[in-house]
Image (cartoon, rainbow, N blue to C red):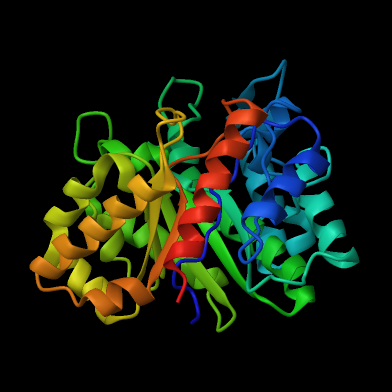
Length: 341
């Protein structure tokens, strides 16, 4: 895999016009372009609403994603009929839910493949999705075994639909699961077990994994990173390298096992909320070099780290403004150019 130093994005951008967002992506992340989520364009492009289409018992009412389990038996039956039929089109992300995906697809059709090595898609991870919805008793769906299983399977189909669409272009594909909820795993705010997380992610990945698909997880907080290194079929871990490299490096033994099976770290090295004009690419490259040296000091082969290294912003940019997002991606592009072999 020729990944060393390539740049990509997380998902959300602050633009209301998808053409402007795509111009930025193909200018600064041409080797691993991604389809943009545009929450400022439409509420339905938010990370929860965007993947709720055709989910059982979930609707959008007055710019809120609402769960109503009153007809759950019938809705779950229809839902599982579509899963058994492997009907990926039923789980599509419609244009009204993602102008970014449909326009990304159209641009790739026209002229967007010149520098592309991988195409990146994404879904909201199942634990973040389930933790964001509550039943009639006010309990998060995370703790409802029936609906948690449905969420894992439905999101896997949402990823599979993207893969089938992007596969038309003959490039390898990367699918990220965005899991900000797991950024506080181990605290009172995330009352789930490691076994539950590992099992859920492995089940999701098993649905979509193939020779032309890499899977990754994005978590922008500080967490127990072994919940991801222990997921046997996970290829990429994307972390906030600007804010939490020192925390990740504490898991050196877990990282050794991860790298031993060709695991890839995507360094979220360009800060989003803390970005300023004083944030230069040269300073951030120095941070990466110091990080590689620290990992080498823990017995992890520096050449392996370098070979399996992607870069990204530390998180999505949907809450920022277009000017700042361009500055962040320009900085990211400079870092990528310096790191590529």
